[in-house]
Length: 206
Image: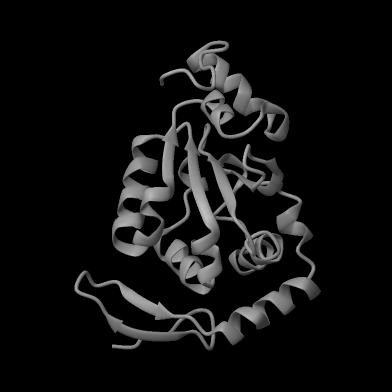
């Protein structure tokens, strides 16, 4: 049974056995979104500072940082949020890249809905999934663990093995140099509060 998508011209197919609707991607639609993103004023989203590139990892792959606490899901213009994501990531995802998501001190107002995550995931073309080499969740909670398990099991199995939960910022230093990671002070302050100082050295057992 076909369903109507909030993103016009995205094709929908039959509902699978779990009740989720699989969305077939219209590459032309993505290209139109990309052109729109380049021509539209997205400063209200970019100014939030929740999504940006921060250096490269130890293999030279771009690191995309997402600050969960700064993502006002219930207030942000979601159409413009998608356009900003596309215009930022499109040149990056042409090659290998990694994402570091910081769940530090988030609240329910920062949590995106399953339906919106599903829509975004299906709008993005294959290169986003193929070239994503790791998705790090820093300061995970029960909510993030359940969310990532459900999402990667039933909606995005292609990235299931790429998701890694890390209890502290310093665990990222095994895969990226500290000087390549630019994050807000509240994250490092919270990290020191719960983990202390110098609790991990790259190469040491976790």
